Image 1 (tube, rainbow, N blue to C red):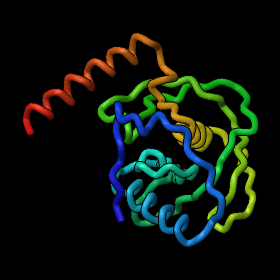
Image 2: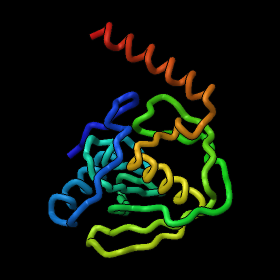
Image 3: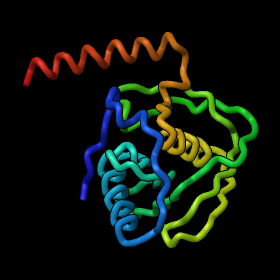
Length: 172
């Protein structure tokens, strides 16, 4: 089932997601729905909070392809360590429509969480996967990628977004 993706400035995106207590059928169903949503958007990652679900779950697929669907899920993910610095060029977000920007990120990241079966996993990532994990875990902490760019660029986006929302409200 395709879920609605919340977009900025929706207040729900600023929530800190609640940890998942037990990995069960409900969680598996949420993960499947999140995958359907991510691939249809299309995107390479999605946090449950973006779909209005207050649970600490992310899914990701750096090679996103709706035919192969090789996504992974992480439940209750936490960044354990980061190293190096890089710039995620032209980063975008399904919840921040019509905007892309260069974002400072850690070059490498170590993340721990649970897989779909509830087993503990540790991921050491660099490159695109590192950026995706940082981006999606930020969502679980109420942080949008525009919070990591310059105040000037962020202000310009917010102003443009408010104008677009006002126009769409007047049209309906």
